[in-house]
Length: 283
Ligand code: GUN
Image (cartoon, rainbow, N blue to C red; front, top):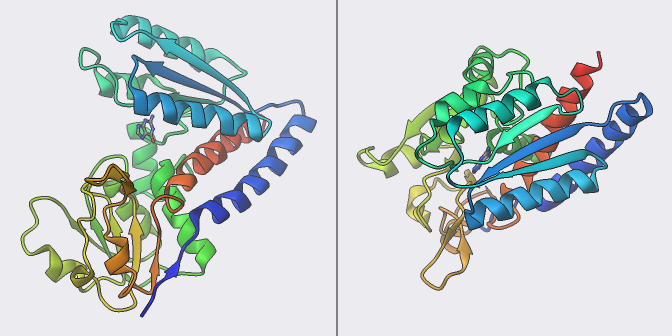
């Protein structure tokens, strides 16, 4: 079997067209959705991600500001800036790019962002709302995965989903969103014994472990859906996922590539959340 490729780039482009239309409507009503991104320090990868977020805002006709702070900024100063943005009516979404320097308490920073502007969906209030199936900002990568499946016509209800990875940003919330959509969910992680015995049973595998080419063909049931969240470099320095694409695509029914799979959906859902916040603020 050769898997059908789930083209995240195409699906993201379609979603962005819908978001751009919503931005137009809001602007006609005098509201321009605004995103504030805070970048602390000079992490190269973070800078690239932040630049891409700014660029996406511009392409969609949204307002965006970038606040750069030096590596040695104090926690107090960062919290002060967030407070200012919480009060700013032109800003509907606030995102502090992670990781932040170790001398700053990440939990405190996340909890200082107003849940009404937490477009990352990382605030415990929004995580609680997600867990109880309420209207909220859903974390962008997990939400993007749900949209990829929906747009591909893959229903998760009644399916066995095995999530490999348990991060707060991806693993834990994606399992919860699957459960909210009536899947049966198993979480596996680095301490799981006999991982294959779980992944082999899965109708849908979500790989979010952060290890290059970790999931092989013999982990996967014939015809299963394989979602690869990994962004790694292999020994040759080439971008690759957590799934050995060459092998697994011979066994799976559907597979997301890296790049052009899950990646383009993350920023798209960030834009979606910011527009949602703007729309709700003008209600
Ligand atoms: N760092 C890596 N991914 C993310 C993300 O989705 N949001 C934020 N704020 N920081 C990140």
